[in-house]
Image (cartoon, rainbow over the protein chains, first blue to last red):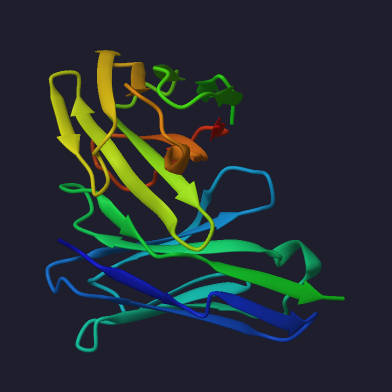
Length: 112
Length: 112
């Protein structure tokens, strides 16, 4: 089955700086890669996802890049704000057909 | 997101007791999932169901069982609870395309 590894486990940045979280996956057949944000005491919520037919996707201050050859993908948050502080989970799988496997999470702290 | 609800929200139980966690959704989704969340281990899939007659084991199904009573209801049972099942449990749903998952608010279970 799919194995998704996520790094770093914790990340502290100054407000206004950029944050990058990286994930690798093992199954070359995987074609769907979501990112979920979980604020303290809340449920995970999808913030962005990418499918393997594109290499990059942006939504305001967040972007995701995908390198299918190397089997890794990354979440980029620019101009970080205190409300970006949360745990972020990456996932990988065969979207639409199978389950998604999640990484172990990254706790992002944005220091004002 | 009140469309996915879980009961109870918190539960403390003793080793050896049987316990059931319930999940209901009003989103009309076919697919439902049970995850457990542990610090440093991320979201791990216990069981998933793609429709009422389809139940599948996830990566950590030992010690758990599920029942899909209807399209809208998916229950998780611990037949004989043990302390290492202490965790935060999330139910999630997705539509038949299987992309975005909508999580419930979580059930915090403590086994003493």
